[in-house]
Every structure is written in structure tokens, then in C-alpha cells.
Length: 159
Image 1 (cartoon, rainbow, N blue to C red):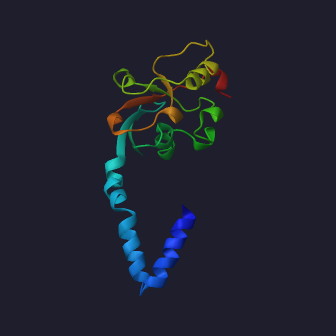
Image 2 (tube, one colour):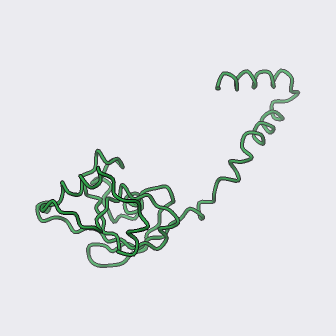
Image 3 (tube, one colour):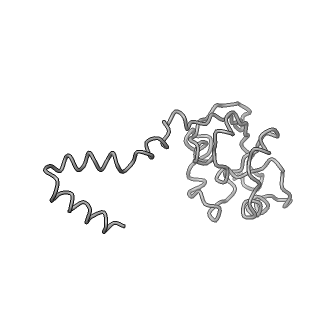
């Protein structure tokens, strides 16, 4: 694919009177649909309400396609050092959040790995149905206005 593009590029240069014409024509040919598919950043913003450990409700913003964890760390509600990677294999449940009842059905079900991590970090090995990992919740426009609460630290995690 890349070789064909290089050959096309070199043949265009030899036939074209100017490189700038080629660049302009390639730019218009290459992405007529990509410009119509791209959204403005303002169209991708998802506003969510998060209740911190002091009980204060704060509005946070994230972008569609990113995780709830990213939105929470960007606003300083979760320490970014507590969750280095957004992969379930590296998760320590430091990004556990509680999802308000009315939003549970709008989220996909927990994966086996997410349930395993949540159970592993629960002393009683029982799942709270509202518990989710922020690194596994992907923001979408359907989640506009969602209410989440940060999970209280477990007594065995407090120094």
C-alpha cells in the first residue's frame, strides 16, 4: 500500500508542473469523507457529575471514546499515579466508582476480568452491583449527565 502511494507520488511529480498542485489535489482526494466524519471537540464533550469522598458533587468533562478514569484523573479526582495503565491487566481497583442506579442499564455489562478485579479487591468477595472500574467505562453521548461516586478507600488500604 505504501509502495503504491510512493509510486503514484513519484509519477505525479514527473507529470505535474508543480508540487503544490499535487499536494492540494491529494489533500482533497484523500479525505473528503474523513472531514465529514470528524466531529468538533465540543460535540464530543460528555458532562458527568462525580461525588467526591467529601460528598461534594462536581461536574467533570470527558471526551467520547475515552474512559471515565481519564476524565476523573484529568480533573484531579483520582490520582493518576494510582492507575498507570488503562488496561484491565494492570488494574488495582484504585479507579473503582459507584454508578447511580438509573445509569446502570446504559452501560455494557462488566467483563469477566472487571468482575475478577472488583472481587479480588473486596474483602468479602461480594460485588456491589453499582461498582465499576473507571478504566473500563468508555464515555459516550448516552452517558451525558451520568452520576458517579468515588468509592471509599478500603480500611485495609489506608496507611
